[in-house]
Length: 78
Image (cartoon, rainbow, N blue to C red; front, side):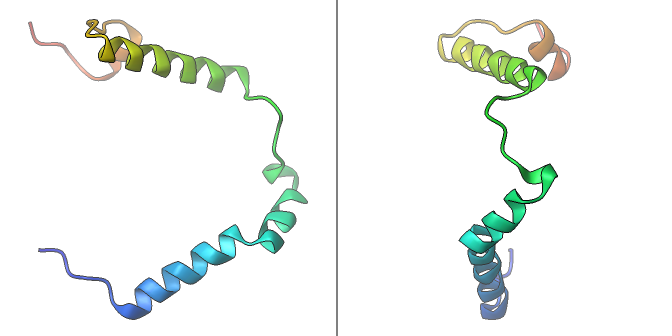
């Protein structure tokens, strides 16, 4: 059975979460080129998200998924 986290670990996690979400940290990160937000997703990422969305919609509709996403999960049993 997994042991419970100590009070000190939980307090440290809470402090880190608060610092990450702080306005000062956001302002600092936005000043760094690698952390600037872009208005649009890169084409490759947008394409992958569209593929994922289609796969999820097909699964919800009961459609058999085969192809690139189906192949990525391993061989299919018949």
